[in-house]
Length: 72
Image 1: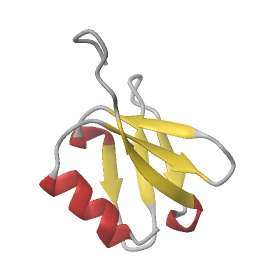
Image 2: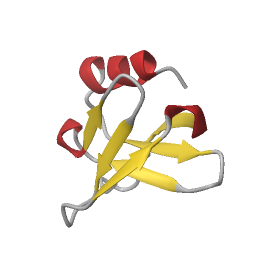
Image 3: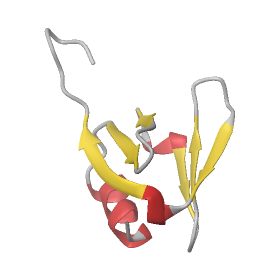
């Protein structure tokens, strides 16, 4: 996936979303503070403050978080 598409999603639509990778892993992005974007890398920070570096080539989708009964 193009990093600019991710950047656009983070800055223009601030709703929570999930990054899905080609190997099936999922990374929730509850707020834009949990993601950092470089030219060729995406860094996702989890709730405990640990970071995971992702290659944008392996990102297959950015999915909205569905709200059910007022909860995420």
